[in-house]
Amino acid sequence: MSVSIEVNVAGKSAPKPVPVRVNGVTIGRDDIIREMQNHPADKPAAAWQQAARALVVRELLLQRAAALGLTPEPLTEDGRRETDDEALMRGVVEHEVAVPEPDEATCQRYYDNNKARFASPDIYEAAHILFAALPADEAAYAQAQADAEAALATLRGKPESFADLARTHSRCPSAAQGGNLGQLTADQVTPEFAEALAAMSPGEISATPVATRYGLHIIQLARRHDGRTLPFEAVAERIAGYLRDSVMHRAQAQYIARLVSAAQIEGIALAGAADHRVN
Image 1 (tube, rainbow, N blue to C red):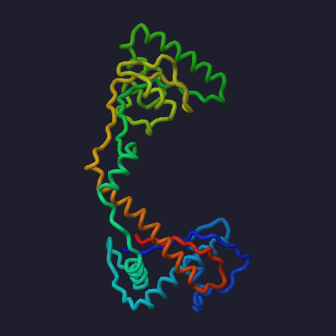
Image 2 (image 1 turned 30 degrees about the vertical axis):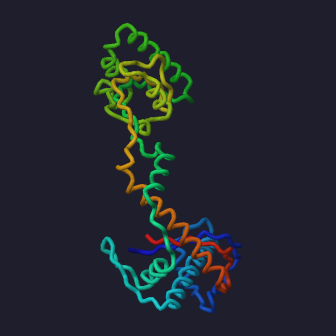
Image 3 (image 1 turned 90 degrees about the vertical axis):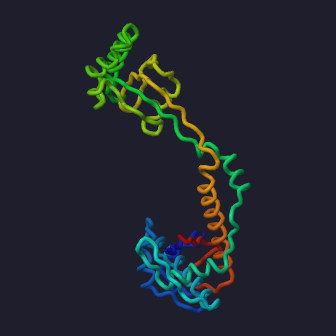
């Protein structure tokens, strides 16, 4: 298990770095410079501020660990062993931040209020004929519209010719398969394409060409497999983990804010709130 610190505090940007001290302990300029690589920002001054704040929180946690008399007990996860400092910071949080375990009623309530999050998407089996043209190219776009309308007129009389028309006219690689796109979900196609699919019934061919950034499409929907909502039992453990992490995150932030407010910090402005995460 490793410890990462993210600081989210309001503070005034300093035009020039000044000595940073935490309860009389100086955080070295070189340490801040090394830490800056973990805090990319548009301007060096902003990266300096973020790095300095992160090291302030780190120092506060290590000072608290010393006050509590903790000894480091590093853990190893995915082949990486914690440093002693990381183990001490984690130990402080585990010792002083109590997080209640979410009960079944809380998880059930979250599930009931967020069922859309636990629904699998609709799956479509569809084919299309793409008449490729950029809207900015007026002549090419007008020709694509004319070609699409002509193909639709043919399909109204002979819908079984869809695959042959796709092989002849479509400018999509799927033309080789008669326009067949296989199974897809709404997030795999453009919004306009997805909207058209959602409005169609199995066996239907789009009544008008569907315009997207790629050009104009004639769509044929073969089948639709409606998504389903996963039962509570299947997601209860995932919900408990999410709620536990969410509560832990808030509790850690409040704890760090208390440490900041009780500390004597020089050289950088912190507004008394910080974000500390144990991963």
